[in-house]
Length: 324
Image (cartoon, rainbow, N blue to C red; front, side):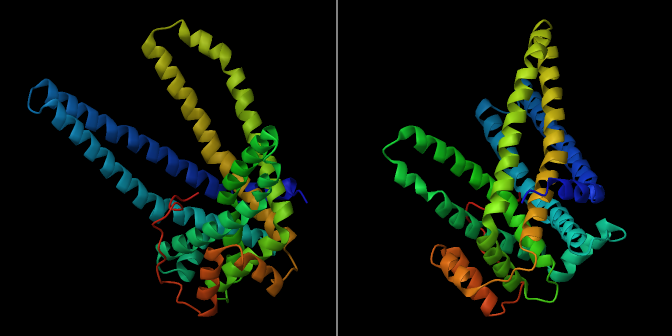
């Protein structure tokens, strides 16, 4: 049921994508610091010279933040998401065929673009799958109502529910991976079938994901305890040195988390799903059961059965708009 060893091997085989995403994240971090550094320097200069008033400075800062958020969303949706999807393609191919494609970065990006002429179309399909998974997983933890008489148990179930909600951000990538193993099939139908297979094999996939997530929580807690002596050392220096020290520590932690840990978790979830569902087929009983619990799945099924052109956009003006 647990395929950590196989997933780690696949993770090592697709390391070029991991390094590419880490490099993109590093460059984005540098660009962010430079952008806000220029904004703050310019605002401070204008305020100090009396060119603008305090209220105008605040409005200017808010506008700068809005511009940054807009640029961030565009970059995430059309650049980072393309790299993420291409990585999923290569992971799926390695698991499916046992072979690493030559020039895997070019191969992955080319495969995504050949199936989706617009990255936003794949992004929209992914958001729809996220919605289905959220509704399905919410049903999994709805047993909390049975424990209304025990507040302690309710709190535990609530924590598990939040972890499951976080797990869904990885499981949708496993559905996309399954979709890319069916290159000759309508992507909407392949995504629907992937959701149905998750409905049949959700226990090993969800258990593996939850084990990893709770392990991450434990590592974070141990990390905080380990940083206690560092806090004492930095506290002996000036405020500036202490602040720079903590920024450096946070930067190292985030680089390791986003650049290495998250791609590994993604690989584990995809590997577990593809292996556990191997040889299995979607069935009407599971499909009807999910459809009865998820309006989003009904929408996905309608698109799959109508053979909707996969370049047609999907409304993403909801809570699932941030690429995982």
